[in-house]
Image (cartoon, rainbow, N blue to C red; front, side):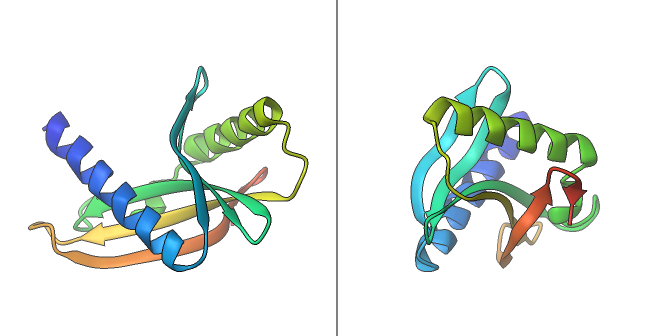
Length: 125
């Protein structure tokens, strides 16, 4: 089952990156890793650095993709963004976005939705 989840996540990230690029985001990095964890996509959107968390779900048995961004995950995303900013010496604007990818149980794409500024230092908006 772990392999199936990984494939689903990879597919979701591919769809999210394509979706962002169609909206004029410039993808700088994918799957950026550090000791704190991983950022799915780092992209620029009109001079603003966007840290993008991709959440992919098949069906709604466990809720929507965006509902899976728990308070603990939100805190981790803020910590990851701050680590990246420090490491790369970025002093411009930045935000954390979420891309929700939802599919049927058979893998048919239902929706891809971008939620800008989804996570702040205070939690999910």
